[in-house]
Length: 196
Image 1 (cartoon, rainbow, N blue to C red):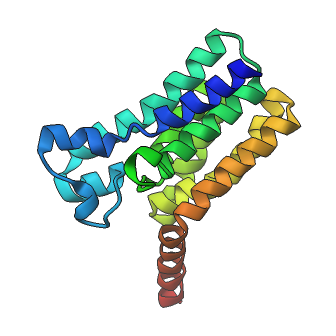
Image 2 (image 1 turned 30 degrees about the vertical axis):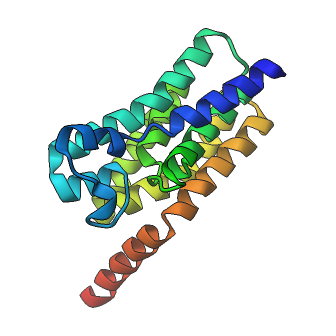
C-alpha cells in the first residue's frame, strides 16, 4: 500500500515536469504568456514554430511513457499502472509546481498508451488518421478516437477497475479541452452546412 502511494505521488510529480517550462531555458520565451496562453506543445508550435512543438511534445510524451514502462518492468498490476497514468496526466493538466497552470494532456496521454499496449497504439493511430483525414481536423481526430480506446483497453487487460480509471483519465482530457473540441466540431459542421 505504501509503495503504491509512492508510485502515485511520484507519477503526479513527474507529470508536473512540463515541456513548455523546459523550453523556457532554451528559447528564453514564456509561451504561457503568448498565443493561447497554454503551456503545451500546440501553443509552443503556434508561438515558436515546429521545432518548439516537437521539443515540448517529446518531453510531455516521454514522461508518461517512462512511468508506464518502468512499472511494467517491475511487474506492477495493470490497475496500479493505469492509476499512475491518470496521475501523470493529472500532474500535467493541474501541476501544483506550476500554480495549476498546465497543458491539455494530449501528448502525455499518448505516451502512456504507447507504453501500455500495442493494440491501443494501433487503434489510436488508425482511428486518429482516418477521422482526421475525413474531417480535416486533428482535434476531432484525437478526441473522437478516445472512446474507442476504452473498449480496446478492457479487451486487452480484462480489468474493470482499470477501465474505470482509464475512462476518468479520458474524461479529464475532454474537460480541459472542452473549448477546443467544441470549436473544432462547430467549424466542421458549419462547413458541412455551407456545402449543402
